[in-house]
Structures are given as structure tokens and as C-alpha cells.
Amino acid sequence: MEIDLAGATIALEGPGNPLVEAALATLRANGGRIVEGVRARPVGMLPPDILLVSCPLRPGTTAEDPPTLYADARKAAVAMTERGSGRIVFLISATAGMPMRRHPRFSMENASILAGMRTLAMEFGPKVLVNAVGFGAVEAETMVSGDKAMLSHTPVGRAGRIEEAVAAVLFFCDPLNTYTTGQMLGVDGGWTAGYGRNF
Image (cartoon, rainbow, N blue to C red):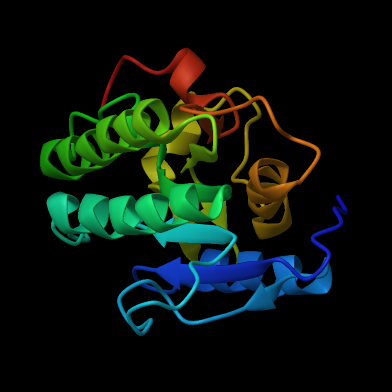
């Protein structure tokens, strides 16, 4: 997938991981320019055009305090609104929309981040579009996102590839996408559609 970012600035808040690094590299390859995150930006500096908010994607990891992530995203949204436009994309686990019995705390943390994302979309539209990509089992050399147990309930029958996951991030960053906000796009091979049984 290719989009034309025409020099748009892109910042990251939250931890890096192979999926985040691939997303940043792909956004750069499509004309984006990577800049410092919201926390590191001097007062008065223009906000990024696009903010990626990275959350832990693998069960067993603990998310940064969800209210802190929300506060960072809200700070960016306020500045973007003053400028007149912006996009915020949360990179979260698909468990935000469908909890896993084996990982209740991880599911709860992601669900609270998803609720915060939707609140920001309501508060800062139409100038700022705020969305999320909910990743299921994504694998490179190792599991980058999700849990191998998800594969037993994934209709596609395999883990996703990083490039498939990054394509969803590009969709939300595409300047031609001007009417989608407050949504989580599940990139999980259909896991959320077929889940509900053994874990």
C-alpha cells in the first residue's frame, strides 16, 4: 500500500517494537518525516501532523499507565486543534475489543485505552481524526503481537505478517481518508469474529 504524506511530520509516544519500527519506516518511505514525540517537544513547538501512540501488544507485558497515554494524546490533540488538523493512531492489542480469559489485566488495560481513544475522537473532531489499529497474532521471527493461542480461533488460519499490520496504520494516516474517526480496525485474521471459547 502506498500513500502520499507529502512531508507530514510523524511522532511516536510509547514503547518501540518491530511493528512500530516497521510502521515508522513505511511512513517515512511514503513521504513522512519523523520528529520528536509529544513529551520531548519544547513548549510552543508545533505538534506533529500524525501521532502514533504505541501500547504493549503482547499479553504478559504491562501497558504504560493508560491515563498517562491518554494525557499525552490529549495534549497533542489540543495542539493539533489549535493548528487546525491532525491525526492520532493508537497501536493496541485486539484484546481491547474482545478480552482474553487468560489475560484479564492486559485486556482491561487495552480496553481502557480504546475507550480513551474514542473519547478523544468525540472531543476533537472534526479537526483531529483519532483511531486505533487492534493487532491480533502478528509474527516475524518471533511473535510481535498477540498470543499463539489466538491462532486456534483465527479464521485465516495463520499469524499476520508485519507488512499486513502496517497497511492498516497507513490507512488511518492516508490524507485521502477524511471521514473515519473513533474506530478500531482489527487486524487479527478474524480472531475477534470467531473468539469466545477456550481462552
